[in-house]
Length: 557
Image 1: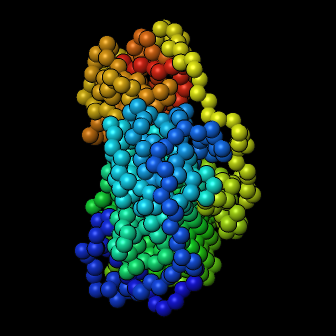
Image 2: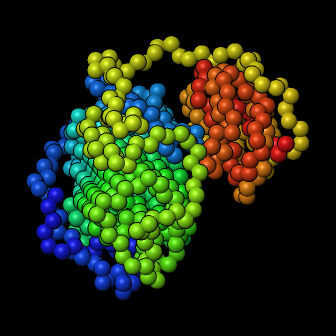
Image 3: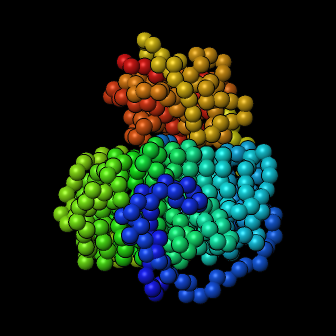
């Protein structure tokens, strides 16, 4: 997209992000750097006519679930599976998307929403129901879980953002979100193309195109924002372009409870700043292609820690550092290539990492991943990233791989025979004697991925084996958590009778997502190396029917 004129309002990086309102804070240095943004669309935006508003179950015309599996930090904390195993619904309007969410049996019933055509303000209305909390001016994924939004064909959200709030286990794949505004008309989602806030967990955004046609002075804000306790997110194989702001993690220097975010194989093109802006937390940034970052790139602030490896930066300025604040962050770097990159001098609120880009911290990554060489990163990203590119991925050796073969004619399977509940006495794969000592769970809180009707997360730590938690389906996770780090080396799983048999499971460090133990068959007493954590998670990854967990007991030894 061609430039004309001089940019304005490129960024107000010290400002608090209030999700769409004017930024209240701006220092003199930032005022001097404001420039007009004069990016214009190359073609007029076509407005699609409002279609039907009823979401219907249709035969699978292309894909019945997200293609491939989550990567990066979205694999931690129990993983991200979206609506896998749920009903597939086709929607061609925003109202139909909201209707599909509201027609579920519960707010956590798995669902796959295949999106076709153009979603805009003209075909999006608020829909009410017990399993949803929607709005008219955005696609609202609020207080829900276990949802996949999958673009089929050329699926476009035109001037309409996607808002994820108080939700978990969400997948968004193969869609374009463009020209979302926070000022002017129409406005949507505070100007964020995709925005997450308020206790969001486990989101995988993959093969999407997020784009604007200007900066804040033209009414646009961030393309990919995370605020107010958002964790375990991956953005992969996506394009972010033509915007004043790429995205942030944390809305202010005090909003630091966000993190565990992975960015890989993305193209950032013609962006003023925030690629991303990190305020606290941990980010893993690898094999991304950066072209024409105008003012700054990866901005690590307020104690943030970023692992930055095998990226390619071209025709850009200040691609890594702490900028527009004296509250510094840190970074670990390796294998990056700088191609025509310029650097500012250090100052009282500017701490560029270059030109040497030496590491200032170390970051341990809890999941496995394959690195492409930095030199081939632009070509592999060019052939794989964005919506409508075939959902191709890298094989970790600078070559693109095709996605798994899909059957274009077979409809989703809806078995008529309900799943069996399994034997009442499940097989045992570990020691049958529970640990001795104080059950630390009795003084803990609890949360989880989903819960079957009539069950509660708190039932796993109430000391009462006649109450239980069960997931809404055959898989899910439940956690016990403490206000301070607690040493745990053994977990005892007590199952209630009448539930399905567990066939595969994991125990996770809920703080980092690291796997402490895993196994197949029915678990009981589980030992692992002593771990200090605020949260321990029991993740059921396979089961026959719906399991019932009466107690998740934790012990120091």
